[in-house]
Image 1 (cartoon, rainbow, N blue to C red):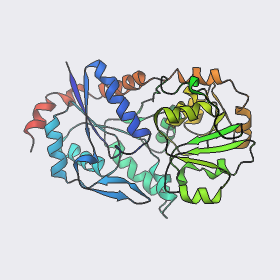
Image 2: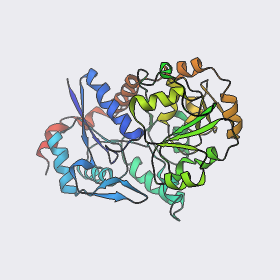
Image 3: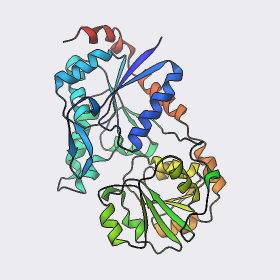
Image 4: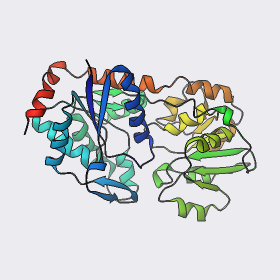
Length: 348
């Protein structure tokens, strides 16, 4: 029987990030299994710019508006993907109506907030525990993140991996870029939480290339005039840059996964990173070099096999990502969903 999953997300197009990419690929992959995903996103509401990221707009939903959207979909499952305004309102409605729901943890908001405001991380984690522990399971991308969150008091943690488009990101796209080799590359949001100076300050041969946009771009361009900041690149142009680089340097210490790591690996580009959550999970048995000395990791990665990097990426797929997601939903007690679609349609 066909099932409908309502995914509530504050992260949506035109944002370019791992959350949006994952949800897009999830919707495409589950169709093959007779599952339909409907999205409740900021597109349907008035919005306001996110402080520090004015290009990201958050919804201003009312409870009545969100309840009406939920009733219109009458889903068999509800998944709240983010802890923003939409996620908060949807969670409140689910709790009030006794509707089961799952959540996912994509972004380290405590570290994100404390990097900009004098708010202790413990306060933010307390709030996040209230949000996620009230549901029927919190999905995380890696085993080490699950272990960490369990130690912080989060309950009912479930694995939900990520995938990669190995057709788009392909070593065959490798070309000669107009920069001296070796080329050390970083791709992602240019913002304080990405810890880019840890990469840009390194004494490395060749060239450093940064692809991406964000609030720190103008500042870093001025501070590091010898670094090649290419701005946002997409599609085959981005895939060509990945394949043409010699090492992908991932300086972040707070990412919960890092889809860009998989994009680099699929392109045959070995990865250098700190031994922290996300890279330590993905690169545990090959594809990159981990070290608390990022310069050492970057230089060591130069000697790694590009074919091994590609083979590592091939162990990840969007179909497995979808399978894990649906398995996590199936783990919610069936009695909790019995007749739920009919009750949603008749609920006020």
